[in-house]
Length: 443
Ligand code: GLU
Ligand code: MG
Image (cartoon, rainbow, N blue to C red; front, side, top):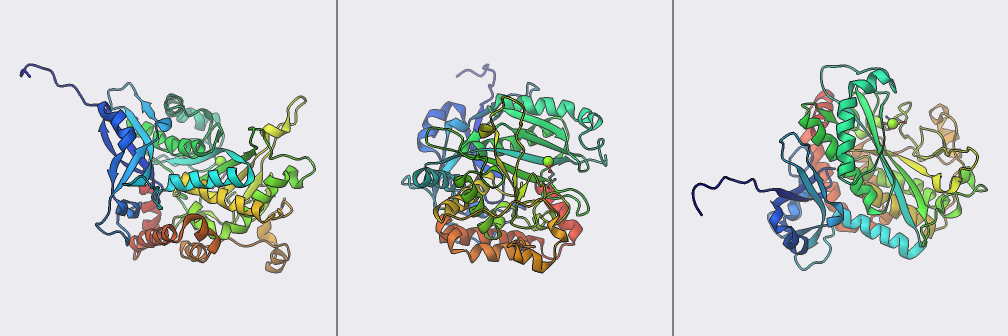
């Protein structure tokens, strides 16, 4: 080695896992070691799963002990060079294993893979999903123009074009981008993908939105709700079912709202278990400010026919001549937000849906009215259950569900509840305004 060689930057690849706080966390290694790392992974520490969104470590059953391996899945590789001299975004999602290769029982992506393989084995079905993500720009501009307006879109079109370019380069196919109704609120949707890839694309989309904003000197937030008097930032998961041959089996013109028998049972399972799994799909303290009437989110465990105030909405299909309804038909889960890991959200929905199929549950008649106007007696008569109204209530419902424990395992549920209690502990003594601000900053 002579002293005259010019230093060359070492490209780093990050292997990261989706975690309970809804973030991606991982470690970087030199690109030159990629082949070796794909085999042996990188070391990981069990207590990392208890790092909350506020960077405060919740009560951990692992303490300082233990070692794990995070093994990257090359199918998730993202490599985006923004061409502005900044370091490229180069990361892969990984699964967390014990050092002997066994799946770690607190690995979120593995829980989703398990849910999907059970759905396949027991019902011969796979899921095709697309995530719809809402977010807001954070600056002193109160809004960038009216909802859905060209004015509002134009204000962020340069961001949008760079962001959608980054998505495409990462292998995520953008579907649409729009100025949403809320203050400085926008929405991005990607094309549906089968199985775990749908959740992978949701986290990649969120991360590339942040990566684009940062490079442009803009700030965004995916917080579940920024202003208690304003619109929330939802995550809507569009789901359809495919059979063993990859044929769409969600639609049946004779079924309720057009739901086929397996799709109706799947939806019935989600609605039945929703009060217990909402702690996984809408998991922050302020998520329950979003799940309130007249915000176009969800308040009850209802199935809605083209109704945007429902936990599960039957979505429209294009009925123009020559358009086949079967491949278009899908239902949308609306009681989720970006404080959750998309992998955990989808795992919970698939486990719940499979349970609906297993038990032959019947879907309720689809609602097409404002349920908040019905009396408590009428709601009860029709079988609508109010979703939990706070995170502690949701966690109690989660911990009390034997079904959910059987899907994820007692240890994971214990760890999850401790994590969320740690998040609440961090917020103790803060005003409501400070709590909203803390989430806005964290997501
Ligand atoms: N912002 C609403 C939510 O919190 C959804 C609006 C819509 O896209 O229907 O879920
Ligand atoms: Mg929207």
